Length: 217
Image 1 (tube, helix red, strand yellow):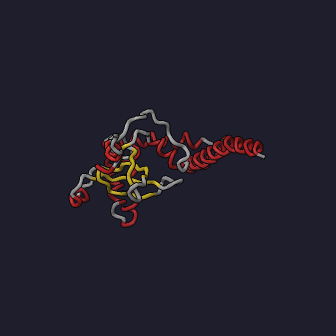
Image 2 (cartoon, one colour):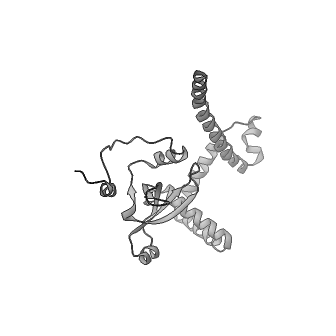
Image 3 (cartoon, helix red, strand yellow):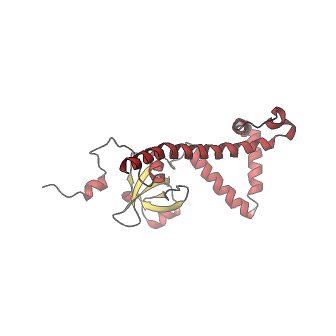
């Protein structure tokens, strides 16, 4: 029975990751294929060819993104975007959603910010327990002024779904910066801590860890 269990686990380790990958890719392809609905019925691939080819929407999506980027990169395009955003900002509910979504997209997809490029460790939910987190902001304005401390804003993702979580304002002195990459930290979170990234810095300790270490006799 032990050998049978070993074989079953070995089979699961092959098919579960493959199945999850296929399902996620299918969802992504089907979602991007929805862009084909932008085309007139007479010019859609299934009308011209007589059958549907999955994945053609990816090409159209990339083309739409490329053309949009070219248009908004010039003065006229920027003016159109400014006009469009000014209209959206006048709609009460839409204004809040659009502004938050735009700020989040700018943080994630641009390289000119310090957000989501550092993996950190903080003592949460109490002293002695540690949680992985990502730095989202270091310029906190009023929060920093009224706390009287040099603080950073961090996002603590939930597991196994890292898209939800909570934010905390933490003093820099209580934050431990890690060497692991963002992707490695996300793998660790999604895998419930089973997948632990390799670390080549054995023997290196942060000042906070050295301060907690017992004195050597």
